[in-house]
Length: 205
Image 1 (tube, rainbow, N blue to C red):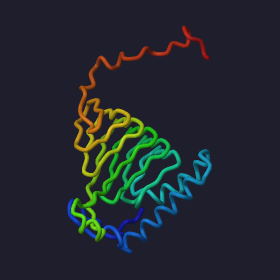
Image 2 (image 1 turned 180 degrees about the horizontal axis):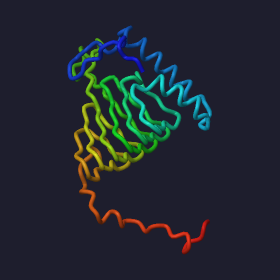
Image 3 (image 1 turned 60 degrees about the horizontal axis):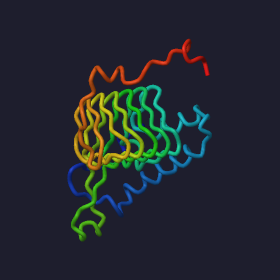
Image 4 (image 1 turned 30 degrees about the horizontal axis):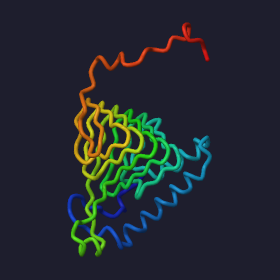
């Protein structure tokens, strides 16, 4: 998607995010594309791919967004190869959201780069803060996870279901909770956590 004519969205500082016709115009275009995308048959891969190409800023190979999917701008989202977002993913992407390769997102997850001021007068005026979200490669995010503005999640990490990620999470760990905290590192022993399916023993179903 060509972003050269898009309005600048500043990060880490207050700006007029609400009641701003320049941003509202882009959001309206994105919402219309999301609506069209969600109205298509889940099996219409060609039609869905055409809309995603228009909607998403950088789309890796074999990237999948299972409908329904909603975002604010779309062109502020970058996903790597083999990306998979399951049903009911929401991305408020004003601050920019970047995903690496081989990222799995379970149903019902929210990624929000937007914050509103604590000061009620500033909030009433429609001022906002945008902070980018960065998710590394080989990350699995469980169902109903919320990732808040400014968070970075490292490579090879698992975020447990229902977590609210308020701060950075390092690479190679299992993290879970509200707020999300590191539970333990992922080790070689995790390769043997589940038995490998043997069709000769269990049959073919």
